[in-house]
Length: 408
Ligand SMILES: Cc1cc2nc3c(=O)[nH]c(=O)nc-3n(C[C@H](O)[C@H](O)[C@H](O)COP(=O)(O)OP(=O)(O)OC[C@H]3O[C@@H](n4cnc5c(N)ncnc54)[C@H](O)[C@@H]3O)c2cc1C
Image (tube, rainbow, N blue to C red; front, side):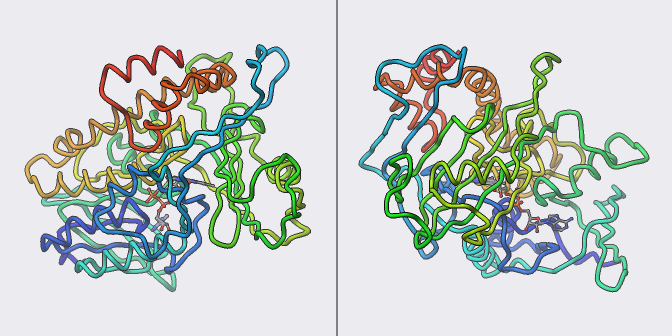
């Protein structure tokens, strides 16, 4: 058994690196464990909002491929959904300041990992996590290594940053409940998103629906309970479809839109928006689950969950990198506080969870009738409020109440 680290972090994506960076820079001995070798692909449109850029501890300018100052919101009329106002299916919202920076996840994550390792954190490639045990003085982690071997590592605190598909959330839940099998906790829900990379060179001279190739588009037409997007990068468009409306307790509404996010849907959508067939242009298509429900996560013991592992994707926007950074930093702050690390993490995480609880309610309401929410965007004051919320995070309470009323 190896015990030389203050903190073990499983997963070296944005959440794991954010935690490791803050811990390593003040001299903590940190080991990041990841089952992939970097640089590695991760399905993600990698839109970095102003609040995400603000949360990063360093500039990521070297990997930003484009900066967008306008977003285009679109919707189609659905039968029975109530007619849209006069002015068609599109709202363009422009600002002087950048709303969202565009990067490619493979390069973004590799860049962030390098910044983190430069602070003194270490990285080790593993095959996966086999078991967790809380023991006197910390947590033991059984790690699958090459050739079928298993090694045990021990540290005072372990951070689970292994994303939506990882093992840590289930193992932490098993530890908490003492159940024989590792299952997702009650509070956890998930969405799903699929994306494709379409080079500008493969596009027709004019896009079928009149979109500009450099438009940053959120389109609420292709799926109920989610949206389609066009994110313009340096040499390609990232086009995708995601469903992430939160699970509801009402059986009649217990619809799972993410189960309808399929390759066929994405291909139809790509033909409609970009006029190309994904197979014909050899587009790279990938997808992944999104971790939701984390507004109700209660940290316990000495295993802290962060990012998608903790279900912290925003259910209104599908944005998860901001939460990954903020929760990673919150976990690091809790470790540095000392004492009851779970209670400290709960306090550090409370602001983000409050925001996500608001998004959860707003998403239920918005995705039930997006046409109504879309109408809100036609009112200039509310439009700028919604935009500011997306780019910068929630405004102060008074404005928030107004926004809540508008989308309810
Ligand atoms: C198609 C799509 C588009 C998206 N677009 C955006 C967007 O534009 N903007 C935005 O903000 N968010 C977006 N998201 C959400 C965003 O990708 C996630 O919220 C974010 O990646 C979460 O970061 P994380 O560090 O928690 O997890 P991840 O980025 O998933 O990192 C987890 C890490 O853990 C490692 N790992 C997994 N399992 C194990 C294991 N068993 N053992 C060891 N290591 C393991 C993985 O290799 C990975 O490196 C999108 C998601 C999808 C699916």
